[in-house]
Amino acid sequence: MSKNAIRKRILSRRDALSPLEIVSLSQEIAAEFLSSAVYAAASTLALYCSIRSEVVTSGIFAAAVEAGKCVLYPRTVGTTLEFVAVETLESLVASRFGICEPSSGEKLPLSKIDLLVLPGVAFDKQGIRLGYGLGCYDRALAAEGRPTLVGLAYDFQVIASLPHEKHDIPVDIVVTERKILSMYPAASFGTPY
Image (cartoon, rainbow, N blue to C red; front, side):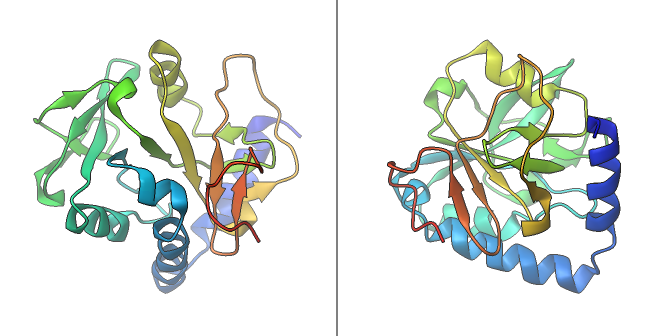
């Protein structure tokens, strides 16, 4: 199946979730993530501002700020991303893509970020991520040293295998409401199910 066909199928299923299901599942996914060893060890993390029916990250933001962690959000620069420190969600503004992002703040290079949480349309069991097709994250991650990458997804977004290109950068961990899937089983990323 092609990337576009998979994207269409998964987005159709994801967009069929009710607002209540999105909130409930996002809370379960956030609880899994916040209880992981990789989150506990991170002092600096980058999140994304959810759109449409993506896993909501506002609860993770609140917990991270309360824990004294530095939290960053991506800002689009041309066809790539830079990561900017954010102290309140109210400081985020809508970008040209309709995604909320920082308008100002301290920019940090990827090499200074411990953990980067990414959205995705689908993930496979090898960590391959299927996004919306713009390639912004892949370009940003190819440009600098990269932090540990974590994908947040509803369980139905994790499939056996995805078609991928040489430039596609896999995530290290996928967190769903049912499991934490580590691409490195010997590593201490939490308790996989």
